[in-house]
Length: 243
Image 1 (cartoon, one colour):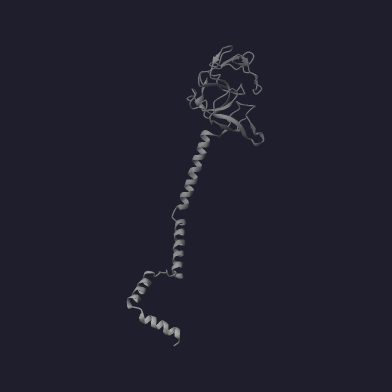
Image 2: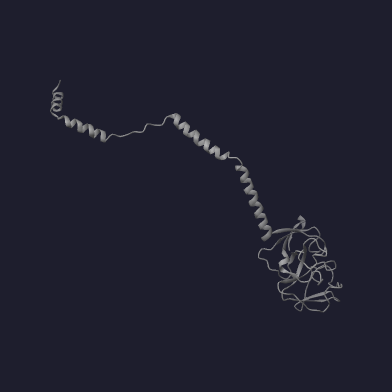
């Protein structure tokens, strides 16, 4: 045994027993707990559980069906709102708007914040007109606004002329003069004042158009019965144009 070993042995013999206890206690108080790493089996089980949960969410019964139903409902609502407030396709029935519009033409109409103006081509509901119980009309009619609320309309049926607020209308869109006169139609040289919230409409093909000149069955048209303004002809494709 060398000198260094002898020295440590002597010091150990001199140290009191309670010092050993203190060291032992101090060692216990500073003991560090180290977590054992998870086994490969545990990690694999956790991974399998996560995948299973995700797959379970994707494979829930009717989950895809619900998504499809929501999409269809949303699309249907959007189409309805667009039809009600933005745009609607209307098919022309008849020749009362020739040559501007022909039979079977399809036009796009809008009623979004729409207020009728002179010269507008409008689509009118017929089920609310005074002629609704006659069977004269079964579908909406399309006509041109000649007078709005407060306007005075007058006809010279001998010359086939129409006056609005005392001014002769230059109507390059009509076919033939405006000189038809039947039993309950407007009189010549008589002023007709358009009532509030109403319009006076005529067809461009005056010889065959049944319109506001018939004071008993059509007359002044309430603005609430206007479905919209025709703004564009989309069919036939070769005749597409703004109206």
